Amino acid sequence: MGYPHSHDLETTTLLSRYIGDPEAKTLSGWLERGGYETLRQALVMSPDDITTVVKDSGLRGRGGAGFPTGLKWTFMPRDSGKPHYLCCNADESEPGAFKDREIMRWTPHLLIEGCMISARAIGAQHIYIYVRGEFFPVSRVLNEAVVEAYEAGYIGENIQGSGWSCDLTVHLGAGAYIAGEETGLMNSIQGNRAEPWMKPPFPAQSGVFGMPTTVNNVETLATVPMIVDNGSDWYRQWGTERSPGTKLWCCSGHLKRPGNYELELGIPLKDVIYEVCGGIPDDRALRAVIPGGSSTAFLTGDELDCSTTYEGLAEAGSALGTASPIVMDESTCILSAMRRIAQFYAHESCGQCVQCREGTSWVTKILRRIEEGDGRMQDLDTLYELCEQLTGRTICVLADSVVFPLRSSLDKFRDEYEAHIKTNSCTAT
Amino acid sequence: MSRDLHPAVAGAQPFQRAEREHIEGPIFETAEGRDRLEKILTRYPVKRGALLPLLHFVQEKKGWISADDMVEVAAVLDLTPAYVHSIATFYTMYNKHPVGRHLVQVCTCISCHLHDGDAVLERFLQETETREGEMSEDGKFTVIEAECLGACGFATVVQVNDEYYENVRPETVPEIVQELRDR
Ligand SMILES: Cc1cc2nc3c(=O)[nH]c(=O)nc-3n(C[C@H](O)[C@H](O)[C@H](O)COP(=O)(O)O)c2cc1C
Ligand code: SF4
Ligand code: FES
Image (cartoon, rainbow over all chains, first blue to last red; front, side, top):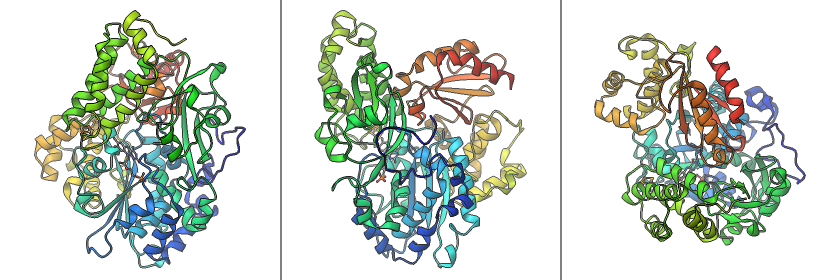
């Protein structure tokens, strides 16, 4: 896909303004575009003032859970006397999501600027950007930008003569989806297996290396500079009361124009699919869409009128998640798609919790058996029972993540499962 | 060139490359190894934090991580070899066996599954005449199935060493394999 994406619906390019502009990657290009001006402003603001603007803007975390960012920052202790850390979560591995990659490979300085401003707000002395190991082409671009920013005095000692110092290290992962979970991520930075830990302790009390830590997603941190620069009311002119602003949407699956689009929150899901992405190739019918990445519930073609906000998608019975609609046309075998999703979670379970380790692989095996024509009707009851066992009983929510698509597919596409079991046939056309 | 690496990024170099060095014996006793170790250690308050970056360095140079390498990494970080082994086996990107010059990872996860990812994987295996995870006889290829590579809008996504190939179709595979073979 080329950039900028052309489409019929008007989009709001705030965050993605320089995506596709190769000049914006370099420090000189970034400075020409007004880069690091907001950091300069932030250097003369108090940490509390920075936090207040972000809090008032209503910005919600873009890593999947949608937790209010400014509020999260207030959990950090004030005069703890300990070193504080900011971890930027660039592990991006939720199937369907590919937005953080675009931010980093086109506008690495935007992310660095956002990291520095946020670090100042929470009193961090060191920032780790945890980039998933596979993103080599991205980390090359990011590394270059980090070195440039160090050399120009936007990172390091006595930043721009302000007396404030903060370091930044790029830390590459090594292939583990679970390192995207915030406590797994911090364990991984410490040189441990990326196993999540049971909270409490929460990161703000005892995070990476046992010190107060905030973990934020790439897109969250990259949104911070424009809010600090323009104010919270400005940001709130887009979106809704509970879902302010714009968001990058990662659209994949059966679409004429898949890709990343920045959209004001609140556009009907139908318009994202049919207007922004041009609909489905050959104008086939839509069978299902998973609106927020693989760990959100299936919606059918009759459920597309909902608005693309945190609250709108929750009302529709799904979730905004990472804003990554995966579109499936009428030729898609839902059973096989669900099996592939379950296989992902079985592969990525870290194995600490029995329910998750065993449950995700049982789900996969049962779905595969049905797919191969050896299913029986009791399998459906077992799958529902597994949904129960996988919900709310484990250290992290990876286990719950497989339940959302699984249960909704069983509820909404029961005819599909039954056809496979009873006649070894598929209801897809 | 690599000796000028900034410490902030010294632990984050792409660690799966086609070019490998055949370094005999301990790697952290070479000038480059010592330099990298020193720089990486400055970035973490405790030595153990350097573990993933040091394993990356070994793989960057050698293409895979042997039991002897794990013993050496353990020694420089005051960890036990068993602990290092437990880390190297937890993370999927660390190769515990030699792999072909071109490590081909084909995503078959959901968005790629919807775009014939399975057929793309099959085709790569056919064209390279290997079974999944097995090195081809000429040492040029190892093909494996991958989970989501984070580029789902450009399915099917294939990673070859430190490069991404996007929008790969089963029918474009022979061309890619030929191009890699000729490199
Ligand atoms: C299994 C699992 C995987 C996750 N993967 C990611 C990820 O790849 N990237 C991310 O930013 N957040 C991920 N999260 C969410 C993080 O735990 C955390 O909430 C987030 O990084 C916080 O940032 P935010 O408040 O800016 O959204 C994951 C959570 C879970 C349970
Ligand atoms: S729920 Fe699964 S992934 Fe999460 S900690 Fe338990 S075993 Fe690990
Ligand atoms: S599903 Fe293949 S790259 Fe995400």
